[in-house]
Image (cartoon, rainbow, N blue to C red; front, side):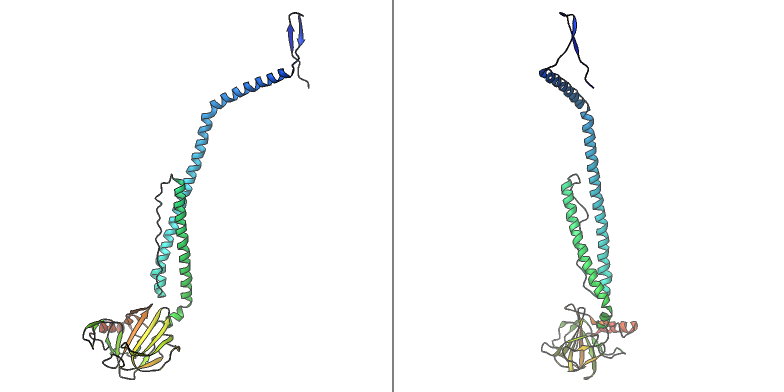
Amino acid sequence: MSKRAKYKYNPETLQYEKIELNLNGLIFRAVKYLVIGLIFAGFFMLLLYPFVKDYAVRKSQKKISSLEYSLEKLNGEMDTVIAVLDNLQEVDNDLYRVIFSAEPTEKTKINRSVIVPKKDHIAYVYALEDKLNALSYQLVKQSKSFDELITLAKNKDKMIKSIPSIIPIADKQLTRLSSGFGIRIDPVYGIPKMHAGLDFTAPTGTPIHCAGDGVVEKVGYNKGGYGNEVIVDHGFGYKSHYAHLNSFNTSVGKKVKRGEVIGFVGSTGKSTAPHLHYEIIKSGNKIDPINFFFNDITPEEYEQMIEKSLNSGASLD
């Protein structure tokens, strides 16, 4: 459909004449309408700008608030995981590792509080990242600890048989314990010295029984005062030491069972009378053997033995 033609009145001819637009006229008209449009657009933009700006600010603030909430929620969830992990570590060390006589794991405290101002979003994210890395490290460490406990549980039967837990001298009347663990008067030098084992008096030739399953580590003479000695490695960090023997009934490398005769009482080395000096070594440290006699005596007999051990004065070596 063609556009309607425009006319202009000519007073000279007293007639309406058709207006013919040339190129310049068309351009002028287009520019005029464009300028008018821009003026109106600018006017409306100025009029609406405060409302648009306020909407954008509110939308951005809403996103920031949502981000802050997410970060705070993440921080709280990590605190919950840390609390659960701390509890697992306590149960691990105070229960499971006590049952299996294993060394406790080293506990690493994770700082639960993020001190960085929450409005400093970048620093807050970095602080949470450090916290997450520390938590991940502890989780891996605890996972390895549980793997170790699983192995210990599988070997529990073997461990129970291996822990030195019987009196090495047959003494149902508990009459042969002559010296306990602790500071005792040295019978040769007459001065207080650490006595790192138990002394059992018995006639020369009395059988000595291995206190637990293990492998014989040493059989021979000790010039340091122990005389003829046998050392049995029970595994799981335990060793038992038998000193002042008269003779041996085992050899290095031999697998022995609990109760098996490994030697005979004597008085070799620095000894004042026939007796067995008996020690238990755990992870390289000598500990009181009296705490391990739980396999062949009653609670009443155990109390008698402790009382006798505490009241003994001088040792025999």
